[in-house]
Picture 1 (cartoon, rainbow, N blue to C red):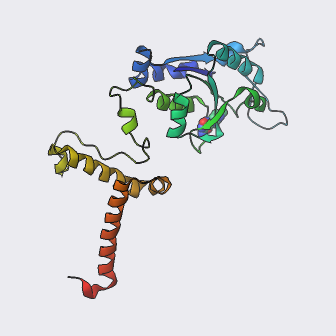
Picture 2: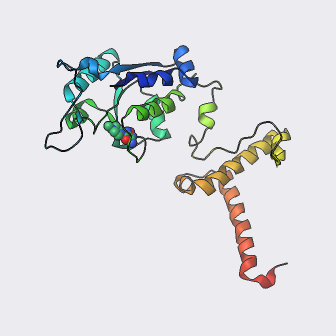
Picture 3: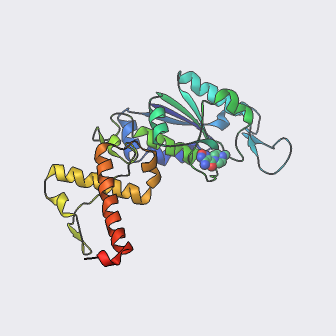
Length: 257
Ligand code: 4HQ
């Protein structure tokens, strides 16, 4: 995977490239990454990358010529790469899109500042418009890092354990089960006994129920969207029956034993 970021603040990416799994992926040649200053493609003597909006109003707009030149140059050095514009008007980023982008080979990420980029850039030069969420950032750089981070960990070899990426939240539509490490007792709270038992089958069962319970309580929308395997249907049905039984006791208190 090859990432090229187009930005007027290329130094913002240095700490991102230099830490953790992203750093290791670069060192291990699993990914390549560079940030290119759009200002290098500005032609006027002030090297301006922004200008006043037609129609008036406050705020500035990214000039199209430097941006177009920067995108074309990056595309030339990365044939087949897809171009991504970070914008609140884009498709909402999710794990499925991360998987799709991870199969691209190359990504050119266009990070705007000010009020955004000249509309004529989007039409011809951009393959995907992506938003990382419904809030307003001061620039596309952080959004670009979010996307590169999520994509990098999906590239084979980027994570230590080969299957680790697929076990995480959302990869199969459920939230992760609870995690525990030493000490066995922390501030009077114990680690669930089954995790110390060495019974791998029971541990897998506990993890499935932990995943399901957390998803049900924190993100029920994920369960509504998802095709449920038989094993999960059975667990949910059992919980449902237990809850029904408890509610029944309260509907007819006479029956309570
Ligand atoms: N931006 N998801 C860049 C965002 C944003 C988002 C605001 C993008 C400012 C210039 N990008 N413009 N949300 O808030 O991707």
